[in-house]
Length: 228
Image 1 (cartoon, rainbow, N blue to C red):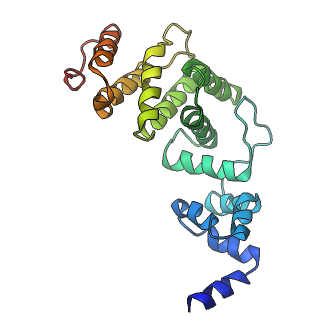
Image 2: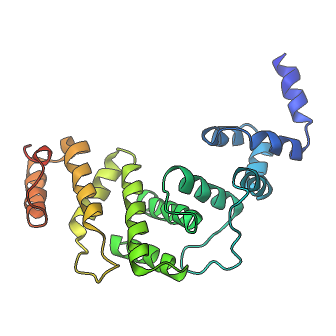
């Protein structure tokens, strides 16, 4: 029976397969794409993603102009950005897709790079993107802060993330002019994640050194941050 089903699926034309694929949960798409070389090719193409966007977000705005340093890229990238903006970062209808692109950009830079750019550069790039697309300085700072929070909250709990958070905690870009400085809320979340989720990763010396650094920025400190 299994062989007959596989044979039947194998003779289906691409456009029928695409209609099936776009109805699957997003979390299963990566697994489905690995079933065969043919299916991998379909997922690598742009046609599937353009149809998925049209059916999932029929009112998504089509921008003829996409200013700023973060590219809009392929249909697959746009699908991912729209998914993120509707499920992870919600910033308002006019900037939903852009928020998704900025989220993907920041998360990739922080997770995939062996030596991520300074947080001030990443923050400034996103600020410039939103301003170029029409947001005010205050609006751009608010949305970018929300994106930072969403990315930090969705980082995997591993050694790379521990080292990354320590680096972000010590960079201290508060001297930069507004809106190019990270918000206190973002900095607080970095320290909070370090001192709660990654407490056991510290040596006693590193913990005391970082705690002394934090005391110069925030007072009073939460009780959950204290003690080793």
